[in-house]
Amino acid sequence: MTDAPANPRSIAAWLARGGMLALGLLCASMGTARADDAAPALHAKYRALQDALGHNPFGKPIHLDSGETSKGVSGDIHAVVDHSFTKVSEALATADHWCDILILHVNTKYCRASTPRQGTVLDVSIGKKHDQPLEQAYRVVFTYRVLSQVSDHLQVALTADEGPLGTRNYRIVLDAVPLADGRTFTHLSYSYTYGVVGRLAMRVYLGTVAKDKVGFTITGAGTDGRPVYIDGMRGLVERNTMRYYLAIEAFLDAVSSPPQAQLEKRLRAWFAATERFPRQLHEVDERAYLEMKRKEYRRQQVAAP
Image (cartoon, one colour):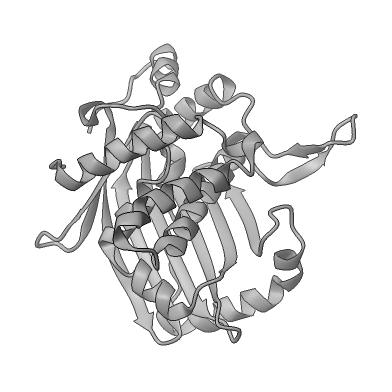
């Protein structure tokens, strides 16, 4: 993987070219619960979140939370999806399908699943929000594991020791349980930690390229009465938590379509979903996004990592 620039001005230039946007997508979870305990705990969380799932600014049963420490950030989404647990479990317990999910994000340039001797890995390249050669993107290799796949619980984890700009300890975890009404309750979590270089790079990015970016948590009201949203690292983590969740949702919604129609349905659904929150998630126009992603998907099918 390419070394990050070592001084603030070089870091700022690298970030402006799209490097820092990579940090928000492939982050990771706050850890996995024991399989025996995870399903009851997730059902208890569903009961506790009834009011939040029914009354929120997203217009659907979603609850978003985030956290920040001196060493890293984390994001969590709990959500109800309108698909059976069987469908969700079969779809999300397949490594190749995660590449179909990841490639929807505007900053994912490539994803290929393989199974060398050490287990299944996802070879992912992260870069600009515009078209970009693979050799200019940043490579992150995730270990992929299905930690639980039983009749009442699914847990999938993606982990990577290292990421861009001194970031490390990436954890992405998806948990799901069936609901009595035939739908599925899911929990998506991700977090990562960073050292001195990563912390400096993030501060530069948040003070320049992303100085006007915000998340979804409302922290108060402005003098005009409009909501004031969280910014900084929690804003970053919330934006990409939502992008990632919407990618999972778009993938699940397209699974029942004819195979030849699934890619286009996923792309259009993901873009439309993100445009519902333009203040937080808008990056490019639809035509540019579709053209870029069709090209990247074709490359993903034939290019070596």
